[in-house]
Length: 361
Image (cartoon, rainbow, N blue to C red; front, side, top):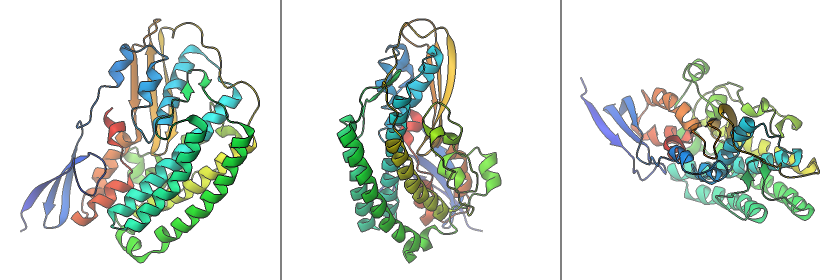
């Protein structure tokens, strides 16, 4: 009978870009059990809500994660706006949706590059990140930043886009769609990628429901869950779309879902630009957040994120709480790793698209 060996995996590992730590219990080359440990990059950001006033804290919230920065700023702003009963102008909602979908493109393209690198496909890695530069250039042109934008604020947004910028972005979306189509052909039909991903890390629909999966992780197992469909505070209600789903539930299915979402996000960005409402880009913010609490959600690139704020009538909130998609998807990761080969561990971890800085804050 083979002896069970415990192998520490991470938090620094040559294949994984995230500081995730797993204790892998192995029998020969097969994982018997995986025990995750978090806390290596905890920064105490939520506690800072007691030290920064409710307007200043949005700069802290968007620094929870560089890749999801706009979504975190938007989620915090939505929660405070709900607490203070502030109605955001339609143009501001459209601009928020535009930048949020650009963030989804940014996040997914970054992930595709990292996934290719984990499989030793360096040329595909560079190709994905070259395409991502198109999105970052749009961010720089419209917000002034490439990673942290500081364009979202309580009551709306800080910057508008001109008609010239709108036309330029529409042209760049056509270029981006062509580039993504070429990249997708490699991910979908290359024999090496197929052999590394197909049938690996399978998660059934029942397990996805039971373990509370969110985002592409859940949709790759056949669950049509996407908070953007229910969001009546953003511009999504003006855009007609359906969640991108697959039924296989393996690593390849999660790749296909993200490829579909790239194309879908381009459609949404085009819809925002073609139907941009006229009017103000922010609403006046008067007074302090009242005593009370408010809870809201945002569909981040990795899945649904939850935002909670508690006010006490002063300029400093009493509590800010955030649950990120990685928190929700870690139980499913443990489930998928059980019984897999050691060589497949990096690919399975990467296909949940973990963000440990989001997870720990």
